Length: 201
Length: 111
Image (cartoon, rainbow over all chains, first blue to last red; front, top):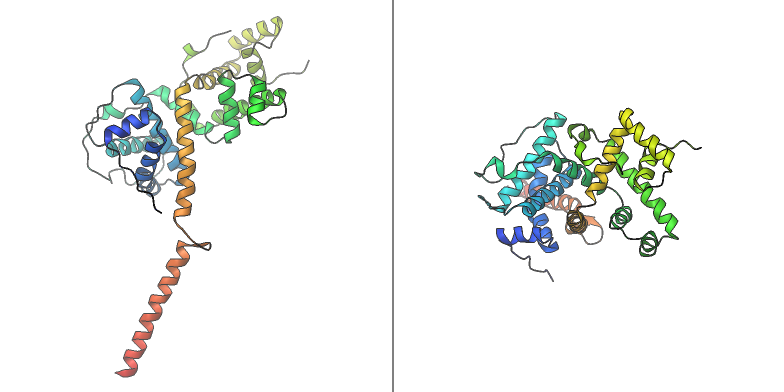
C-alpha cells in the first residue's frame, strides 16, 4: 500500500531542520532534490556533485538556524533553491566552468542577498563534510566515537574490531586519509585557515 | 630512530606521545618549517570540526536520509522482473509503431 506523503509548511520545515528531524529532511530531499539536480545537470554538473551541493545547502540552513532566528521573506523552497544556486554558482566560478542558465529559476523571487550569504569559516566546514561523507560509514563512526572521547576498547567492542589497538590504528588511518583528502582538494587553496585556532599544547 | 612523517609527528604531538626532546624540536620546527606549520594548521582545523557535535549529528541524519532516498529512487524507476523503465518505453514505442504500420497497410489495401 502506498503511504501518504506528509505535508510540512515553511515553519515546520525550518523547525524540522533545526531539530534534525529525519522525516523533514526526507521530505526536503523528495521535493527539492530533483529540482536542484535538473538545474545542476543542465549547468555542467552531474548527479554526484548535486548530492554534495544539496548536502552543503542543508548544512548552511542548519547553521543559519542555530545562529539566528531565520525570518524568511520568501517560501522555504525558494530560499533553499537560492542557496543551492549560490553554492553552485560559486563552485562554477572557481572552476571556470561554462555557466549557461543561472537565471532559469524555478520560481521568481525577491529575497535579500544578505539572507543566504556564505562566509569563510563555513567553507572549510563544507569542505570537511564533503570529504568526511566520502568515507565509509565505519570509518566515520570510528572518528566520531574517538572525538567523542569514547575509550578505544569501547570503540573496538561497538564496531566489532578485534582489540583496542586495532581501533586506535584504524582511527589514525581514517584521520590521515581525511586530512590527506582535504589537503589534495584544490578548494582548500581558496580557504584561509585562521592562525588563531592554532595553539601549542 | 625511525623518521616520522609530518602527519605521524603532528598526531603524536597532539596526543602527547612525544618525549620532552622531540616535543621541543617539534615546536621549533613548527616555527621554521612552513610546510609542517601548514599541515599542523590543517590537522587542527579538521579536528576542530569534530567539536561541533550537533553538526556532526545533523550530518549523520543527512547521510541516512540520502542513502535511503537514493536507494528508493532507484527502486522507484524499476519495473518488476528487472525490466527497467527504458525497456518498457522501447516496448511501448514498438507497439505503437506496429499499430500505426498495420493501420497504414490496411488503409492502403482497402482504398
